[in-house]
Length: 418
Image 1: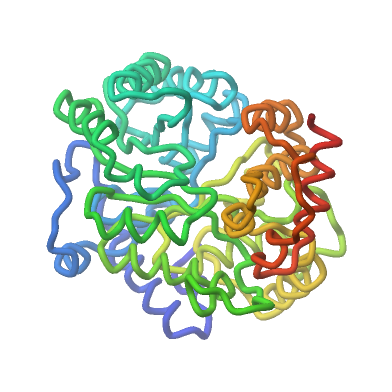
Image 2: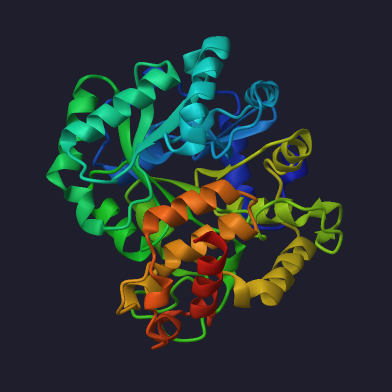
């Protein structure tokens, strides 16, 4: 598809696509060419490199100051597809994979390790992660990463991240920073990052402002267009066009790379919903386009598990969201907003009984919508939630900006997952 075929009536979009066209003749930055350390001259670093380049049928966006150019559709590893499809996805231009030792009991990492051997380590960038679980120490974090590298059959990870970070104070914890520094000195990780499911409004600003983290992965999806029902103290507009946008602006302004997860917020598993289709575009494709029109994002990380999903996702590369597709998304949000948890974590912070309501809601989504029932039960068991300890005070629901029935979701999870 020619670049001219991608241009819509948006001046901003036209400018972005001109940048892509200008960079198309250049090669992707290989692993060896990325800077050893992040630059602190953020504006000049951004100006020195194009925001995106196009190569064949894929658009690659710059992952902040890492200097890596990653496919705007990238691959989540929970789970990964079978190896036949995995090879095809790499052939189609995907070059960034999100991994964790918790995905498929380490089999995600083993599958990527076999992929490296088949196609070459230099063809793929990986984001591997460690968890802050149990009585963790600097030594235990290093051991965890070294175990991941063995399963990945590689000497290093391009980005090493903290998985599901919730507490902002952990960002500067000496044990974590010590582990990062030792692993980097040994050549086992190149850049530092994190993923954040809840409490993003506290974690992401501190990560960015500390100057210690090169990229962040956040939840970002079409439900972030939703207007809030009440004022929220952390951000005046909170997640409704949203505090998330302000977080993205903050990170981008410091040249911190940003990837988005949970983009296909449509109830989890993809279904062929005829009502959610317009102009030949499925609602899933429209959701991907909606996220990718934010040019400050480097990539959306999504699971692709079969040939239909591969076609669906890769067909959106470089294509703008149309007016009718936008209307379809707004209608979907209006119809489903009352039952969709944004995982902002404010309910959890407000609970006087310490019930982890946001994490419970995430487990419920895994079970009811995503078809990940064993994972839902395993994650729920780790929480050791005492839903019966609910005092029925409604503090959680008063804190929720979106009017979600938090107590009902918590009780439903207890009945299904305990």
